[in-house]
Image 1 (cartoon, rainbow, N blue to C red):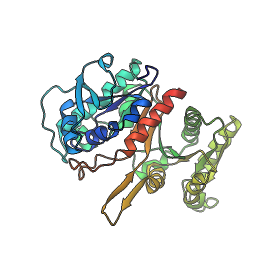
Image 2: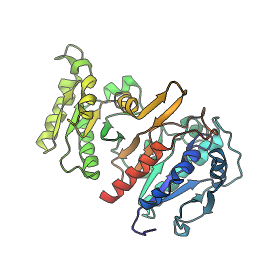
Image 3: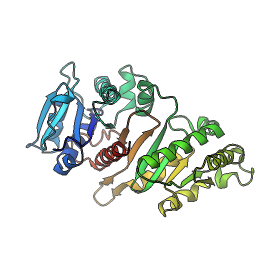
Amino acid sequence: MSKNLPIIGITMGDPSGIGPEIGVKALLDASLYERCRPLFVGDPKAFEQAAGFVGATEVEIIPIKEVSEAKFEPNKIEVIDIATEAFAYPIGQVSAQSGDIAFRSIVKVIDLAMKNEIAATVTNPINKEAMNLAGHHFAGHTEVYAHYTNTPKYSMMLAHEDLRVVHVSTHVSLRQACDLVKKERVLEVIKLAQAACKGLGIAEPKIGVAGLNPHCGEGGLFGTEDIEEILPAVEAAKEAGINAEGPIPADTIFSKARGGWYDIVVAMYHDQGHIPLKVVGFVYNREKGQWDDVSGVNVTLGLPIIRASVDHGTAFDNAGKGIASAASLVNAIDYACMLSENK
């Protein structure tokens, strides 16, 4: 294996969910080792159990303590062991023990990336309730990363193929989200979107900025935020040399983006951006009663390190069955590789 390939640190996620299972599944593809040097952080025992769930009897789980110990060989999944006690994590249930080690695996990969021991980080899904039960009071991954990297200005980008969305606000109530649509924040996120696209190798990004209200407020009839906050932000972005357009009604901007009008869309709040991404990335087979595909990547923008993530939850209902798709995790690893190459 080439030593020039980026080392990607991957968290275990909540071991009561599907994280370890999709981790094993992702690394079963030997071609992944041709694109990067993957390394997990968590409890090796959880990965041994997960290998049994997915029928990967040929895989060897190797506990290590330092990145320097890793050899990065196919069919040998190396895990930086941060387990302090021998826990039997309850499958498919909220557990403080699971929440604790999931949290500690995040902190560990952040530390490794800040020390430049790894090129990028990838996160598996966590359960926020479990994490908070363990005494770690954060709204989600993004806030943990912001705290431990001392990052005051950040945003979430979701991506599926060439559809990309970045958010003005995420984990707040819808009422709060409307109050957060201010010129300064919208402009800040437009700039983050520009930087993200350039980090992906897009030389001249085209940025579409969504409106907040129906029909962008219809000239003020349905709200004035689009006129008073979003439009001035777009104009300021243009003055700064950014190719931004908006506000554009949210009910059409995503179709335009899929059609190639924009390289990225600035959404005003969590669901405005998440819903279109998951409509195209999550494919449910009603005849089989299962998900055929769960694709998509979550990237935190504005951090001093690279963080990409799966775009789905812990799927407690599927945990332990060996049926969860690893597509989103593979997408996230590939995104981490791409971002590390263009860093």
